[in-house]
Structure formats: structure tokens, C-alpha cells
Image (cartoon, rainbow, N blue to C red; front, side, top):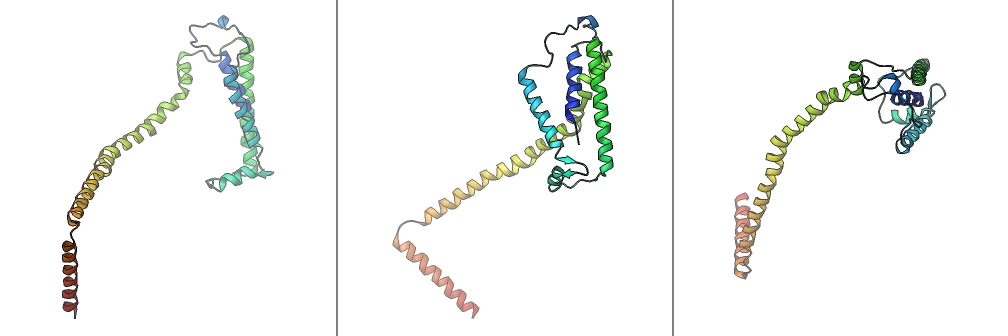
Length: 207
């Protein structure tokens, strides 16, 4: 069971107190104008997602109801099935850390203090712990390389190239068939007689 609204409050408070550059903005430069929560176009989706997460969370209460778990397990069986006690322990730890983080951010916001003042840490946090860069190197670029090689070595020469060959073969067969269809009765009679002769020869040879 998760409580995303605590995490949202913590992120909101930290972002409201975070300057663009810790060295260019001193502690006294943090005047608070307005609510600091962001425009309505950003807050509305966050609020809808938060409410949805809360509602979905109550669809799976350890030891009480497991509607969500039963629904998702039908599509993908879990590798590890936690006990009821483990579910409550992890939920307690997650909520406690979220509340503590929210309190720290709230006090820092009220005092006008920066929680992180190191430029190096600001860079790391600003790049989201370099998660996107790591994902790009480990997964995105290799997948793009494989896709490019398959396109150049399989799709273009085999799939797309064979389409032209197939089209050319169909045209040749159609042209030959058109030449046979002269429209003359004697030509069709000749073909019929030849076919009967071949059948007679085969029948005699088999007997």
C-alpha cells in the first residue's frame, strides 16, 4: 500500500525552495511570491493522479482486500509474494520517510534555508541521478543500434528488395499468359489436343 501524496508534498516543498543556481542566489534572495505551487495547468493533473493513486492504493490492503493484486496477478505472476507483515513494514517505512522528508523540506522552506548547497550535488540532483543517461547507454542506444542493423541488413535487402523481384516475376508470368491467350479458336483447340495427347501417353505408360 503506497501513499504518494506524502512524496508529492515533499517534492513540492523542495522545488518551491530550490534556486536555479545555489551560488547565484543567496539565502536572502528567496522571497516567496504567491503560493509557489505552480500554475493550475500543472497542479490539476498532479491532483488527479494523487487522488487516483490513493483510491487504487485502498484496493489492495494487506490482509483485508487484494482486488488489485488479484487483477494484476492474472496477467503477470509475482516473482516474490510478500507476507502481510512485510507489506505493513515496508508501508510504514515508506510513509515515515515521506513524512520526515516533508517536515525537513517544510522547516527549510519556512526558515529560508537551502537543504543542498553543494554545486556537485545540485548537478547530480538536477540530472535526476543521471538515470536518463544511464538508461540511454544501457538500453536505448543498443536497441537503436540493433534496429539500424536489422533495417540495413534484413529489411532493406531482403524484405524491400524481394518486393521488386516478386513484382517483376508477376509481370513476366502475366506477360507470358497474355501471349498464350491469342483469342484464336485454333490455338485453344491445339492446346486441348496436346493436353489430351499428354494424358493418353501418361495413361499408356502407367499401364
